[in-house]
Image (cartoon, rainbow, N blue to C red; front, side, top):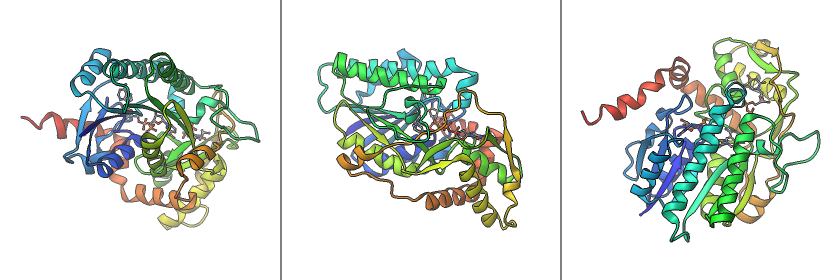
Length: 352
Ligand code: NAD
Ligand code: TYD
């Protein structure tokens, strides 16, 4: 049985990837390593918690001796690395936290993989999940391709760019087998309500203002998270060693148009008169260094691996809204902080 390590599996995208791997690959044992920071929530993967091919490990990727010991003990065959500090606004107020987890944490994983695989690299794989934000900002025209030069603007994207470079460097210098993907903005169930879509859904439910940064004309390319998980599965199994793939939704929206669409869907679902939620839109001070536009050219992964998004934006957004309305307890637990005690309840008291 192959042992696969997934980092950050209690977070938003990681939870979808862990669920997919546990369910699709009974011949793998999946280890989910997560520090359970504010963004980690074991409720996200409660449904697979008791699967026989799944183990949760609480731990910090910044802790090198711990990571070395974990790799020595389990001799993982593959690593899918998603653990990260992921929110741009937080990176502006605390950039060092992003260097620690995203750069040093990634280095620790690379070093540990290099050590246990040194005599046998064949059949092994280190997969780094990254972002399109490393490419910086587009103007009105053009798309990011795999050959676009890195030009990160926020401390978050600078830390992800740095870790991407180290992954490549370990491939070139030590022959570490790696694949790397850069993906556009994800949305869907279990998204932490600090990011645009879940924050605004939560605020609409509670009749709170919807803070649109600047003029709202910033553009993002949105991808349903389950489509990202499918792409990650494909790249992990079929991606070419030492190669990189861009993943995107072919789905660009200016923030303000997206917010208005979301308001319309929420009014319908909540049975409120049309236009009610849109009254909550409030233009606020812009994010410093705000990237104008991201848009991915996902032709390569489409042509080489046959991947394309399966969910339209209208369908994905409606599924997302339905999920949040059906899971208000999840949302309440996250906003109240109650989710933080899940680990203690499920794990720490288990042996006593
Ligand atoms: P998230 O913030 O929802 O989850 C991150 C997870 O990592 C959490 O469970 C957290 O507890 C864990 N973690 C953080 N620091 C850790 C540490 N030091 N040690 C161990 N675990 C730690 O993030 P996400 O949105 O799911 O993003 C996952 C990955 O995908 C990240 O690498 C991110 O850069 C990348 N990505 C995200 C998006 C997006 O739209 N969200 C798009 C492209 C790429
Ligand atoms: P976000 O979800 O933080 O993702 P990212 O910064 O990684 O793209 O933000 C998406 C877009 O929405 C971005 O242009 C910033 C904007 N935004 C707001 O206008 N208001 C908000 O409260 C948030 C969180 C984001």
